[in-house]
Length: 333
Image (tube, rainbow, N blue to C red):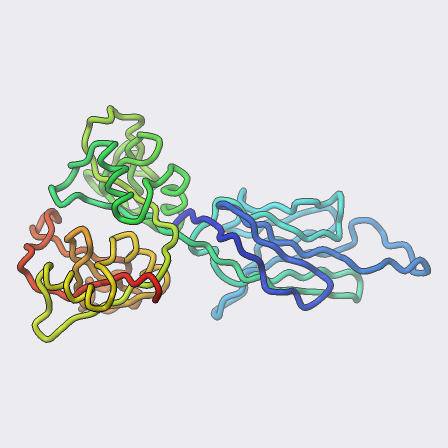
Protein backbone atom coordinates (compact mmCIF):
# COMPACT_ATOMS: atom_id res chain seq x y z
CA UNK A 1 0.00 0.00 0.00
CA UNK A 2 -0.34 -0.52 -0.61
CA UNK A 3 1.16 -0.80 -0.41
CA UNK A 4 3.16 -1.22 -3.74
CA UNK A 5 0.73 -0.43 -6.50
CA UNK A 6 0.66 -0.49 -10.26
CA UNK A 7 0.34 2.71 -12.24
CA UNK A 8 -2.67 2.68 -14.56
CA UNK A 9 -1.82 3.26 -18.22
CA UNK A 10 -3.23 6.77 -18.22
CA UNK A 11 -2.18 10.32 -18.89
CA UNK A 12 -2.10 13.43 -16.77
CA UNK A 13 -4.66 16.15 -17.43
CA UNK A 14 -3.70 18.49 -20.24
CA UNK A 15 -1.15 20.96 -18.83
CA UNK A 16 -2.04 24.60 -18.56
CA UNK A 17 1.22 25.98 -19.94
CA UNK A 18 3.88 24.98 -22.48
CA UNK A 19 4.89 21.98 -20.39
CA UNK A 20 3.89 18.34 -20.58
CA UNK A 21 3.36 15.59 -18.02
CA UNK A 22 3.06 11.85 -18.26
CA UNK A 23 2.58 8.74 -16.14
CA UNK A 24 4.10 5.38 -16.92
CA UNK A 25 4.32 2.09 -15.03
CA UNK A 26 4.35 -0.41 -13.56
CA UNK A 27 5.17 0.58 -9.96
CA UNK A 28 6.99 3.68 -11.24
CA UNK A 29 5.78 7.16 -12.12
CA UNK A 30 7.51 9.61 -14.41
CA UNK A 31 6.25 13.15 -13.91
CA UNK A 32 7.51 15.50 -16.60
CA UNK A 33 7.63 19.27 -16.70
CA UNK A 34 10.14 20.63 -19.20
CA UNK A 35 10.93 23.98 -20.76
CA UNK A 36 9.52 23.97 -24.31
CA UNK A 37 9.70 27.72 -25.00
CA UNK A 38 11.35 28.92 -28.21
CA UNK A 39 14.72 30.56 -27.43
CA UNK A 40 15.13 34.25 -28.18
CA UNK A 41 18.42 34.76 -30.06
CA UNK A 42 18.64 38.31 -28.71
CA UNK A 43 18.21 37.32 -25.07
CA UNK A 44 21.19 37.33 -22.70
CA UNK A 45 23.02 34.05 -22.19
CA UNK A 46 21.59 32.07 -19.25
CA UNK A 47 24.21 30.78 -16.85
CA UNK A 48 24.18 26.99 -16.58
CA UNK A 49 22.33 25.37 -13.67
CA UNK A 50 20.47 28.56 -12.79
CA UNK A 51 17.01 26.94 -12.95
CA UNK A 52 15.39 26.19 -9.60
CA UNK A 53 13.14 23.12 -9.70
CA UNK A 54 10.77 22.20 -6.89
CA UNK A 55 8.31 19.30 -6.69
CA UNK A 56 5.75 19.17 -3.86
CA UNK A 57 3.00 16.81 -2.73
CA UNK A 58 -0.19 18.77 -2.09
CA UNK A 59 -3.01 17.72 0.26
CA UNK A 60 -5.85 19.61 1.91
CA UNK A 61 -3.87 19.70 5.14
CA UNK A 62 -0.40 20.71 3.98
CA UNK A 63 2.24 20.85 1.25
CA UNK A 64 5.29 18.62 1.64
CA UNK A 65 8.51 18.92 -0.35
CA UNK A 66 9.40 16.03 -2.61
CA UNK A 67 12.51 17.48 -4.23
CA UNK A 68 14.37 20.76 -4.76
CA UNK A 69 17.16 21.24 -7.31
CA UNK A 70 19.36 24.32 -7.72
CA UNK A 71 22.91 24.89 -8.91
CA UNK A 72 23.47 21.22 -9.67
CA UNK A 73 22.52 20.16 -6.13
CA UNK A 74 19.42 18.08 -5.41
CA UNK A 75 17.72 17.86 -2.01
CA UNK A 76 15.11 15.13 -1.54
CA UNK A 77 12.40 15.30 1.10
CA UNK A 78 11.87 12.81 3.90
CA UNK A 79 9.76 9.89 2.74
CA UNK A 80 11.15 10.07 -0.79
CA UNK A 81 14.81 9.23 -0.17
CA UNK A 82 16.03 6.54 -2.57
CA UNK A 83 12.65 6.67 -4.35
CA UNK A 84 12.81 9.91 -6.37
CA UNK A 85 15.26 11.09 -9.02
CA UNK A 86 15.45 13.85 -11.60
CA UNK A 87 15.83 12.05 -14.92
CA UNK A 88 17.96 14.52 -16.91
CA UNK A 89 19.44 16.80 -14.27
CA UNK A 90 21.97 18.44 -14.30
CA UNK A 91 22.73 17.57 -17.94
CA UNK A 92 19.50 19.32 -18.98
CA UNK A 93 18.91 21.74 -16.09
CA UNK A 94 15.57 23.03 -17.39
CA UNK A 95 14.04 19.50 -17.60
CA UNK A 96 12.08 18.87 -14.42
CA UNK A 97 10.99 15.31 -15.18
CA UNK A 98 11.21 13.02 -12.14
CA UNK A 99 10.75 9.30 -11.54
CA UNK A 100 9.08 7.99 -8.38
CA UNK A 101 9.73 4.31 -7.70
CA UNK A 102 8.56 1.81 -5.05
CA UNK A 103 5.09 3.34 -5.21
CA UNK A 104 2.81 3.26 -2.19
CA UNK A 105 -0.89 3.82 -1.75
CA UNK A 106 -0.11 7.06 0.08
CA UNK A 107 1.63 8.40 -3.05
CA UNK A 108 -1.80 8.94 -4.61
CA UNK A 109 -2.61 12.64 -4.88
CA UNK A 110 -1.66 15.94 -6.48
CA UNK A 111 1.94 16.92 -7.23
CA UNK A 112 2.98 20.47 -8.08
CA UNK A 113 6.09 21.44 -9.98
CA UNK A 114 7.68 24.91 -10.05
CA UNK A 115 10.50 25.92 -12.38
CA UNK A 116 12.05 29.33 -11.62
CA UNK A 117 14.62 31.25 -13.63
CA UNK A 118 15.28 34.71 -12.25
CA UNK A 119 11.94 36.51 -12.14
CA UNK A 120 10.38 33.99 -14.52
CA UNK A 121 8.24 31.32 -12.86
CA UNK A 122 6.24 28.49 -14.37
CA UNK A 123 4.31 25.74 -12.61
CA UNK A 124 1.99 22.84 -13.27
CA UNK A 125 0.04 20.17 -11.37
CA UNK A 126 -0.07 16.42 -11.92
CA UNK A 127 -2.77 14.11 -10.53
CA UNK A 128 -1.35 10.71 -9.64
CA UNK A 129 -3.28 7.50 -8.90
CA UNK A 130 -1.70 4.40 -7.39
CA UNK A 131 -3.97 1.37 -7.62
CA UNK A 132 -4.04 -2.03 -5.95
CA UNK A 133 -3.93 -3.38 -2.42
CA UNK A 134 -2.13 -6.17 -0.54
CA UNK A 135 -4.25 -8.21 1.87
CA UNK A 136 -3.78 -11.17 4.19
CA UNK A 137 -5.98 -14.20 3.51
CA UNK A 138 -6.71 -17.10 5.85
CA UNK A 139 -8.44 -20.26 4.65
CA UNK A 140 -11.83 -21.26 6.04
CA UNK A 141 -10.05 -24.44 7.23
CA UNK A 142 -8.06 -22.46 9.79
CA UNK A 143 -4.70 -20.79 10.32
CA UNK A 144 -1.81 -22.04 8.20
CA UNK A 145 -3.81 -24.37 5.97
CA UNK A 146 -2.53 -23.53 2.47
CA UNK A 147 0.30 -25.11 0.48
CA UNK A 148 2.12 -22.85 -1.98
CA UNK A 149 -0.01 -24.00 -4.93
CA UNK A 150 -3.20 -23.71 -2.89
CA UNK A 151 -2.14 -20.20 -1.84
CA UNK A 152 -1.76 -19.07 -5.46
CA UNK A 153 -5.11 -20.61 -6.38
CA UNK A 154 -6.81 -18.98 -3.40
CA UNK A 155 -5.64 -15.51 -4.45
CA UNK A 156 -6.78 -16.15 -8.01
CA UNK A 157 -10.23 -17.22 -6.81
CA UNK A 158 -10.48 -13.91 -4.97
CA UNK A 159 -9.78 -11.63 -7.95
CA UNK A 160 -6.13 -11.25 -6.95
CA UNK A 161 -2.64 -12.66 -7.46
CA UNK A 162 -0.17 -13.82 -4.85
CA UNK A 163 1.78 -10.75 -3.69
CA UNK A 164 5.41 -10.19 -4.67
CA UNK A 165 8.20 -9.37 -2.16
CA UNK A 166 8.21 -5.75 -3.36
CA UNK A 167 4.46 -5.42 -2.99
CA UNK A 168 4.53 -6.73 0.58
CA UNK A 169 7.46 -4.43 1.43
CA UNK A 170 5.63 -1.40 0.04
CA UNK A 171 2.52 -2.42 2.00
CA UNK A 172 4.66 -2.49 5.13
CA UNK A 173 6.15 0.92 4.26
CA UNK A 174 2.57 2.23 4.08
CA UNK A 175 1.71 0.90 7.55
CA UNK A 176 0.53 -2.68 6.89
CA UNK A 177 0.93 -4.85 10.00
CA UNK A 178 -0.01 -8.53 10.27
CA UNK A 179 1.42 -11.11 12.67
CA UNK A 180 0.62 -14.07 10.41
CA UNK A 181 3.13 -15.91 8.23
CA UNK A 182 1.99 -16.07 4.61
CA UNK A 183 3.23 -17.28 1.24
CA UNK A 184 4.35 -14.73 -1.33
CA UNK A 185 5.21 -15.16 -5.01
CA UNK A 186 8.88 -16.21 -4.70
CA UNK A 187 7.91 -19.20 -2.52
CA UNK A 188 9.16 -17.47 0.62
CA UNK A 189 7.03 -16.98 3.71
CA UNK A 190 6.91 -13.51 5.24
CA UNK A 191 4.86 -11.14 7.38
CA UNK A 192 4.99 -7.37 8.07
CA UNK A 193 5.47 -6.17 11.66
CA UNK A 194 5.45 -2.61 12.99
CA UNK A 195 4.47 -3.16 16.63
CA UNK A 196 6.80 -5.91 17.77
CA UNK A 197 5.44 -8.29 20.39
CA UNK A 198 6.06 -11.81 21.66
CA UNK A 199 5.42 -14.49 19.01
CA UNK A 200 5.95 -11.91 16.24
CA UNK A 201 9.73 -11.51 16.50
CA UNK A 202 10.59 -13.70 13.49
CA UNK A 203 14.11 -13.16 12.15
CA UNK A 204 14.35 -9.53 13.28
CA UNK A 205 14.04 -9.95 17.06
CA UNK A 206 12.53 -6.76 18.49
CA UNK A 207 13.04 -4.58 15.37
CA UNK A 208 10.14 -3.60 13.07
CA UNK A 209 10.20 -4.83 9.49
CA UNK A 210 9.05 -7.60 7.16
CA UNK A 211 9.87 -11.00 8.67
CA UNK A 212 11.23 -13.60 6.24
CA UNK A 213 11.30 -17.38 6.77
CA UNK A 214 13.13 -17.81 3.46
CA UNK A 215 12.24 -20.24 0.67
CA UNK A 216 10.06 -23.04 2.04
CA UNK A 217 9.02 -26.51 0.94
CA UNK A 218 5.91 -25.87 -1.22
CA UNK A 219 4.06 -28.59 0.70
CA UNK A 220 4.32 -26.65 3.96
CA UNK A 221 1.17 -24.80 4.97
CA UNK A 222 0.74 -21.11 5.82
CA UNK A 223 -1.66 -18.25 5.14
CA UNK A 224 -1.12 -16.13 2.03
CA UNK A 225 -0.67 -12.47 1.06
CA UNK A 226 -2.61 -11.51 -2.07
CA UNK A 227 -2.47 -8.43 -4.30
CA UNK A 228 -5.66 -7.12 -5.92
CA UNK A 229 -5.00 -4.47 -8.53
CA UNK A 230 -8.20 -3.48 -10.29
CA UNK A 231 -11.70 -4.61 -11.16
CA UNK A 232 -14.30 -3.99 -13.81
CA UNK A 233 -17.63 -2.84 -12.40
CA UNK A 234 -18.53 -1.89 -8.83
CA UNK A 235 -19.26 -3.42 -5.44
CA UNK A 236 -22.53 -2.64 -3.64
CA UNK A 237 -24.02 -3.58 -0.28
CA UNK A 238 -27.55 -4.87 0.15
CA UNK A 239 -29.55 -6.15 3.10
CA UNK A 240 -33.10 -6.75 4.31
CA UNK A 241 -34.98 -6.52 7.59
CA UNK A 242 -34.11 -10.10 8.53
CA UNK A 243 -30.79 -10.10 6.62
CA UNK A 244 -29.66 -13.16 4.65
CA UNK A 245 -28.30 -16.65 5.03
CA UNK A 246 -25.52 -17.26 2.52
CA UNK A 247 -27.89 -18.91 0.01
CA UNK A 248 -30.39 -16.07 0.40
CA UNK A 249 -27.55 -13.58 -0.13
CA UNK A 250 -26.55 -15.23 -3.40
CA UNK A 251 -30.19 -15.15 -4.54
CA UNK A 252 -30.57 -11.48 -3.59
CA UNK A 253 -27.49 -10.62 -5.65
CA UNK A 254 -28.78 -12.53 -8.67
CA UNK A 255 -31.99 -10.50 -8.53
CA UNK A 256 -29.81 -7.42 -9.07
CA UNK A 257 -28.21 -9.11 -12.08
CA UNK A 258 -25.03 -9.47 -10.02
CA UNK A 259 -23.12 -12.02 -7.96
CA UNK A 260 -21.51 -12.08 -4.54
CA UNK A 261 -18.30 -10.06 -4.56
CA UNK A 262 -14.93 -11.68 -3.98
CA UNK A 263 -12.68 -10.71 -1.10
CA UNK A 264 -10.27 -9.02 -3.52
CA UNK A 265 -13.08 -6.97 -5.05
CA UNK A 266 -14.16 -5.81 -1.59
CA UNK A 267 -10.59 -4.72 -0.80
CA UNK A 268 -10.43 -2.70 -4.02
CA UNK A 269 -13.80 -1.12 -3.18
CA UNK A 270 -12.50 -0.31 0.31
CA UNK A 271 -9.38 1.31 -1.16
CA UNK A 272 -11.72 3.37 -3.34
CA UNK A 273 -13.51 4.70 -0.23
CA UNK A 274 -16.29 2.18 0.47
CA UNK A 275 -17.42 2.38 4.09
CA UNK A 276 -20.15 0.04 5.37
CA UNK A 277 -20.64 -0.60 9.09
CA UNK A 278 -22.64 -3.76 8.40
CA UNK A 279 -21.40 -7.30 7.90
CA UNK A 280 -21.95 -8.95 4.52
CA UNK A 281 -21.49 -12.28 2.78
CA UNK A 282 -18.86 -12.70 0.05
CA UNK A 283 -18.36 -15.28 -2.70
CA UNK A 284 -15.89 -17.38 -0.67
CA UNK A 285 -18.56 -17.74 2.09
CA UNK A 286 -16.66 -15.36 4.34
CA UNK A 287 -18.28 -12.38 6.09
CA UNK A 288 -16.50 -9.01 6.05
CA UNK A 289 -17.13 -5.27 5.99
CA UNK A 290 -15.06 -2.25 4.79
CA UNK A 291 -14.30 0.63 7.16
CA UNK A 292 -12.86 3.96 6.01
CA UNK A 293 -14.18 6.14 8.87
CA UNK A 294 -13.02 5.33 12.38
CA UNK A 295 -15.79 4.69 14.92
CA UNK A 296 -15.75 2.44 17.99
CA UNK A 297 -18.83 0.42 17.03
CA UNK A 298 -17.38 -0.48 13.62
CA UNK A 299 -14.44 -2.83 13.98
CA UNK A 300 -13.23 -1.28 17.21
CA UNK A 301 -12.22 1.98 15.56
CA UNK A 302 -9.78 0.30 13.17
CA UNK A 303 -9.63 1.00 9.45
CA UNK A 304 -9.59 -1.67 6.77
CA UNK A 305 -11.65 -4.64 5.65
CA UNK A 306 -12.76 -6.29 8.87
CA UNK A 307 -13.38 -10.05 8.96
CA UNK A 308 -15.98 -11.92 11.03
CA UNK A 309 -14.58 -15.23 12.28
CA UNK A 310 -16.46 -18.20 13.72
CA UNK A 311 -14.06 -18.79 16.61
CA UNK A 312 -12.43 -16.40 19.12
CA UNK A 313 -8.95 -17.36 17.84
CA UNK A 314 -9.82 -15.75 14.49
CA UNK A 315 -10.37 -18.93 12.52
CA UNK A 316 -13.32 -20.37 10.61
CA UNK A 317 -16.02 -18.63 8.58
CA UNK A 318 -19.51 -17.97 9.98
CA UNK A 319 -22.10 -20.72 9.69
CA UNK A 320 -24.01 -20.64 6.37
CA UNK A 321 -27.33 -20.17 8.17
CA UNK A 322 -26.13 -17.12 10.14
CA UNK A 323 -27.62 -13.86 8.93
CA UNK A 324 -25.78 -10.92 7.43
CA UNK A 325 -26.06 -8.44 4.59
CA UNK A 326 -24.41 -9.10 1.21
CA UNK A 327 -21.74 -7.44 -0.89
CA UNK A 328 -22.36 -7.95 -4.57
CA UNK A 329 -20.35 -7.15 -7.66
CA UNK A 330 -22.08 -5.68 -10.68
CA UNK A 331 -19.98 -5.65 -13.87
CA UNK A 332 -21.71 -2.71 -15.52
CA UNK A 333 -22.20 -0.64 -12.37
